[in-house]
Image 1: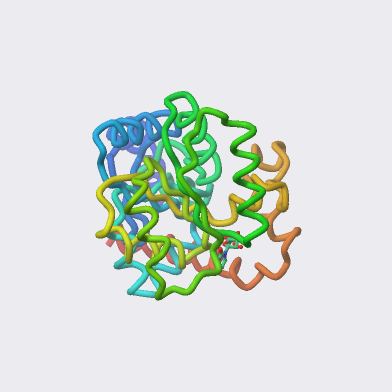
Image 2: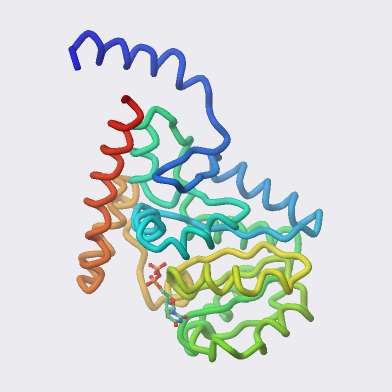
Length: 264
Ligand code: UDP
């Protein structure tokens, strides 16, 4: 490609493509909802008011690669109401593909925004996931920090997959928000399996967030987060995640390929 063509493409990008902000942006077959943190929480609030049933997936490059390698997981996340971009890699890829996504909507921050919303409006929640002692601590912490939230129930994440006890409890108590912290891909599988039984609620997979609320795991310091290096911090703290991080270079290669294919 000549320099002239590259320059022309950049000019086109700056003046035309940027103006068209698509509501959904496809990144390697995963359709991301293009929004920002503030708007997204407002949107979820409207769903709560309407008693809707909503499935939220927060996806980073690792999850996009997992979905590309596991067709069953791709099928599950395709059933989500919203897939939001949790990771700077998704934002960078969207810009590189000239379909820019507005900003990162990280799962942990979204959960905190939703806890604040629930506290302000006295919404009810249910917590599912993490180790028994951890979820207990997270509940105590939420009760202390967000006293107006109605905690309808909670359960640790090491249950018999065939048991219907948790589903039954959620069916009866009808919480406004259900946070599912079973890690990827379990949490999305659990939501997809059980969703048909529920009448309403926002169901969202939130990975290891209860560990953070309980004070058993630390988030990256703010400076690292501002530099978009949260992923590196997690790797340094938990080198056992190393093999999972191999998904990142694979993601970069696949994005290159997508761009080349789109140019053909
Ligand atoms: N977990 C769980 N049940 C399981 C496996 C894991 O509740 O069968 C919990 C685990 O205790 C931790 C969270 O799921 O709190 C996984 O956190 P991680 O940071 O690994 O999430 P991911 O990066 O996979 O989203």
